[in-house]
Structure formats: structure tokens, C-alpha cells
Image (cartoon, rainbow, N blue to C red):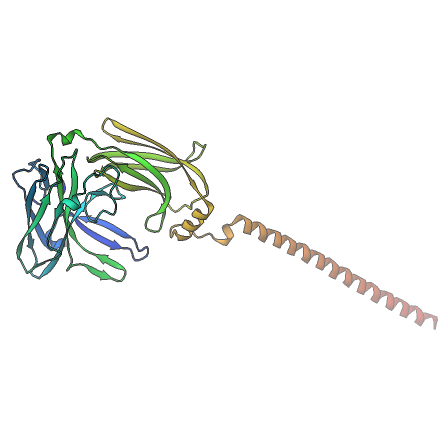
Length: 365
């Protein structure tokens, strides 16, 4: 299998746990054996539906059983441990199809899960230096035909190279796409897009508005552009904007698409999201109202590390109170000064009167 073919390419994924935020970040690198430490070669069978690709895309019949083969080669001079798994295709928060984790729930419209249909006997594979290993994948198709495609992937990560440095964890992996279909008409099924709900959330300890989107059809959606705005309910003024290009969405998947607040705090109130998704001539329109409570806003704002901590001198109320206190202090100083001056004058007057009386007595004598 050529390593420079891009469709369903074997990704090298670095999972980074942020030192400050404690949230995994996914970074993609090129298909380079230096990173993963091993190479993969998928042996495509005769029933490969799409011939020009390097991933598995198989047309099969109900109840059919088949064995697939992937050759793993340790490209390093040291022993490594590779962990394989079959995972259903999912869509991540960046709008990218991924096969890196097991699915937690079945999404709407999903009849069969590829994780139940394709199995691997090995939990771990130990590869000696430059050793080659034939990994077998067992397929047992459902008894009934199905529309569209079942999509997943073979995920392989190098357990040996997984490192922890402080709070940062890294491991490198490869993915090989796995698509199953039972009919030539599977391509007639097209993906769809629905907005399920709009909520407040956080990403990397930063406030976001989260759009829960769903493709409930057994077909991929690719090259989707998504635009939207958030306004105060009843207002035309745009508070937040979203502009995403070239999204890829897995079959029967739901995913969160975040809109960043860019360091601004949540404010309680009723808001409205309006958006449009386009794929060539296809267009989807979305319009949904949502609320942010005071309690919800306060809780998330306290956790947001990007919100500028308010300087006491930038708070208008505090400034007003300081101004009032200063004015009262000034008035008090003026009053005390006048009282002091008056007392001093009175003292001097009394002193003059005393001296005057004394002189008068002296003259009489």
C-alpha cells in the first residue's frame, strides 16, 4: 500500500494532555514510519468495491464471513508493542472523521455497528526489531442487507513510544479505513445534517457555544461549509460568528461544533443561533433559541482561564464607591479644617481680649 495516497490516509496522531488545561489535543503528522515506529500494508481482497484506494471498501453479502490481512512491520531496531482495535467512524469537534476511540452509544439511524461485525483476536502485538507480522481481521456480516455503508477503521498505536513528561502524554498511531456495503445502490444514499441542540460548554478550559449536529444517514458527508451567528433573542446584532470550511462528517454520527467566545464571559439571557450548511448544491438552514442561566454563566466563567480577571479599578461600581468615599473624606477634611481655623481664631481673639483687659487695669493704677 502506497504511503503517499491521501484518502483515508494513515494518520500519526499525537494525543497531548495540556499542562495547564488537562484536555487532550489531537495533532496530525505525516505518514512517517519514524514517528509511529512501524508500517502497515492492507492487503485488499478481490471484493474491494473501490479499487483505486488504499483502505478497505468491501462489497459483501448477508451472513458472509471473510478474513482480512494487514501486514505490520517494525521499522525500528528495538522491540515495540502495538495495540490494535476496531472503532466505528465518528466525527470530532474539528469536523474531521476519526477512528481513534470506541463508540459509547449508537447514534440515531444506526442499525449495525462495525465494532460488532469486525473482530481482532490480538489485544497486543509484540514486534521484535524489523519483524513482520500478519494481523488477521475477521468479518461476520449481518443476516440482513442494509442501505448505505457501515464505516469504521483499524486503529493501531505504538504502546512502547507512549511517553509521559509531567502532565503531557504522547502516543503515535495509524488508522486504516474499513467500509462495508451490501449493494451497488449504497451510493444512492446521501448524508443529512440536523441541529439537535445548542448549549454552553468549554473546550480547553475556555467558554464556547456548542452546536450538537447529527448525520443520521449511513453515508459520509464531505466538503461541507458551515456558517452561523449568535444574537440576543429579538436583536439583529451579531455577538458571535462561526465560519467553518470543508467539514467531513461520518455516517450515523453526532458531534459538537464549538463557537469560541474568544475570552469573553457568558452572560445570562435568551439567545438565538442561525446557521447555514452547504455541500455543493445542497443547503441546510438552522434556527434555534437557547438560554443561559445566571448560575450556568457564573460557573463556567469561573473556570474559563482566558477571561481577563477584572481589575478592581476597572469596576464602575467600585470606582463610584471610591469616588464617594473620597468626596466624603474631602468634605470631612474641609469641615475639620474650618472648625480648627475657627477655634484658632477664637483662641487668638480671647488672647487679645485678655491682654486688652490687662492693659486697661494697668492704666487705672
